[in-house]
Amino acid sequence: MGKHTVTHLALSGGIGGAKLSLGLEHVIQSPKLMIAGNTGDDFRHMGLYISPDLDTLMYTLSGRSDPERGWGLAKETWSFMETIKEMGGETWFQLGDRDLATHVERTNRLNQDEKLSAITSLFCKKYGIKAQIIPATDDPLQTLVETEGGLVSFQNYFVREQCKPKIVSLQFNGSETAKPCSDLEQVLSSSNLESVIICPSNPFLSIDPILSVKGIKEGLKQNRAKVIAVSPIVGGDAVKGPTAKNLRDLGYPVSALAVAKYYSSFINGFILDKRDEHDASLIESLGIKVFLEDTIMTDLKSKIRLAKRVLDFSKSL
Amino acid sequence: MGKHTVTHLALSGGIGGAKLSLGLEHVIQSPKLMIAGNTGDDFRHMGLYISPDLDTLMYTLSGRSDPERGWGLAKETWSFMETIKEMGGETWFQLGDRDLATHVERTNRLNQDEKLSAITSLFCKKYGIKAQIIPATDDPLQTLVETEGGLVSFQNYFVREQCKPKIVSLQFNGSETAKPCSDLEQVLSSSNLESVIICPSNPFLSIDPILSVKGIKEGLKQNRAKVIAVSPIVGGDAVKGPTAKNLRDLGYPVSALAVAKYYSSFINGFILDKRDEHDASLIESLGIKVFLEDTIMTDLKSKIRLAKRVLDFSKSL
Picture 1 (cartoon, chains in turn yellow, red):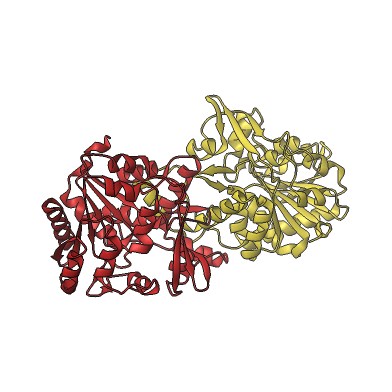
Picture 2 (tube, rainbow over the protein chains, first blue to last red):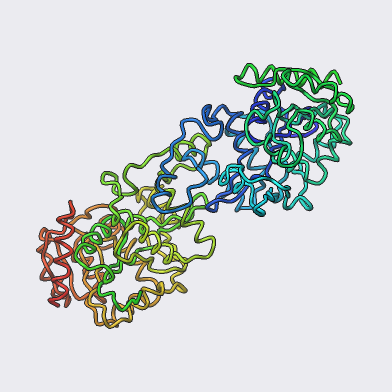
């Protein structure tokens, strides 16, 4: 299980990041790919520990994710939620019957002091996932959203309020003491690491919580590996989710350039969508190499194609 | 919520006891009936607190129990279990998707230090159950089965081993310190209590764990209320479950007489099935009044009829 075998590390949030991660899993041989998922969204609901981004990664890479909804499992049923509703329980967060298997098993193991990283590895093995998915940290980390109406938990903002409140700032509770999970720590200090891929995830809600963990951003800077970000902005808008809105909330222009600038202290390359070509020279002027590509991932083929481009680009740097 | 309003107390295990309890609920007005369920079968499975007898009581009295299986909820689905199986998890104990709503909600509340009795009351309210179902005790109580092959937990014996091992003896772990739940304690010392009904449940696996809780058997003896047992043996055999086998294992004859004798120190009356009429005079010779009746409860009508007979018999004593 030597982590020195890992040559490629992806940092990922949920849906968009999972799409590219699936492509990467197809083009990078088994023990060489590690995917560190955001855990700032994790929370306990009805006593169950839920880790939305790790789940989306696991479900996507095991081919079990629901192709329509984009989250959760295919062939899902909703008897549990129906019954909770009948009982007058909390229904704002949807938990499918199949999805519950993950939450119940994970919560049981966490309550017996197993580490989230070990549990995630075990689940990946059981689901037949070849890449190593890990949480960025095994320590508590909680994204809190300061909105104009006050401080709310991530799920309150994201699910309950459907991202409607304007974000004033973000806090990552626990980041002062959280450490990278030990496998990630080893990889970040490994001389065999060739590239780090910042997936096309929300910079503020998905990537920043990962980078807030002490040692991760420093690791990216110190490691000889090339760091490449894939733009979450395509054609001047977000592909999915509140990235565009969040840029606006926080006073940035809604553009790929703004994201590249935001990442500029630690990335070497930026995969820019062809639709945003007009930003290319301004990004290059920041000292960041740019690679133009069609970044929309509609099917497995386009995911694999983009993953290949990321690797080729990384080698060229 | 004064417990002085309770005039009838039933002690019940699972399926058979729940059938009579449903009948009792139809003939005894709302705040007057309390049903104390056995909690010796309770256990934690995958971290979820499961209380099979309380669940059967709640599901039966709310009209939600599955009419075919006899346990669990009607219109149940099994996506959770299918997924647990795919993940290589434990599948020996079946947990339906709807059933899980009870377990998840209860476990969450227990983990926040709510009492099992308070949670059960809350669920009964939400399910529209008029009788007050309570656990015999809020304290830990665990039925352990000493078999010829060694000591096993109740669920191991009952579900995993399907009651096949011969029982040598039973232990009720925790009974030395467990106290009746406070509502039950009040009812047992109330001068308004008119009758206590020992439901047609397994004497060793369902009723004994209740009676093992310090103060309950003593309460039955000291209270002026008449104590009536309904025979779990019909036509010289058990209606359902391992009662006949357990009598044999423990060296008793398989007969209603044996059960009446077993209960003789604390009951005043015994409802004997007409098929076992031959035992009547021998039971009466123990100083126990006998009432002959068709005790098989196939539909709601027969449950209500038997419940009425129990009340009439109690008044006549």
